[in-house]
Image (cartoon, rainbow, N blue to C red; front, side):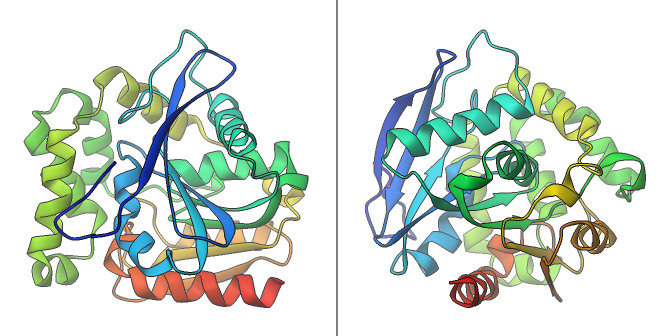
Length: 279
């Protein structure tokens, strides 16, 4: 159970065993159609707190920690994109959600794209936040961001968290919401990420290439991207939208990579509007 100083609803948490031997930590809140959130690199279910607060009255939200992150255990199985996608499908089956909406952030959006190709019949919709198709056409971030990903595994936790939040959030929003930023930093420091898992996630992100598969995704797809994203430049979202048939692109001005935090209400409105129009 998580009861934070900001979010006063109680999340129901449990560990779900998946086929390769790991236990995936899952929390659920709200009621309605199931909507699964997949977090990004180096983050846990807590990254969705802002968005969950806005959306919990409309959907049955399912939030989990990727294998080896947060309260989810590691396994001896190869740490791969397909394996993480399989985890997501098994968790939703275990919870009794045969069909569901799927939202993925950054690395989680890579996993989400894989789910859409592996099991399209399971998805009612797909939302990709801060995403890319990867591959040779991927637009790389700044040298500062690249350096961060190359060294984050060896950084002191407080330095890694502070710099990660700085790069992910729009600076104007962060300056105006220091209390919220501090809460995310505090949670991250109290729940440190395993350096080995971080290195595996970085490898998956670096090698990600869905430039051929993206065109085969026929699930109704919404692509949300912060216009000032430093981690995954917004041109990647435009290229991804051009690849996925009949996808919808929403670019949010005044938002960074973590638009689910610094533009939570606008992200929720975009998702709600998209799902209503897709019914």
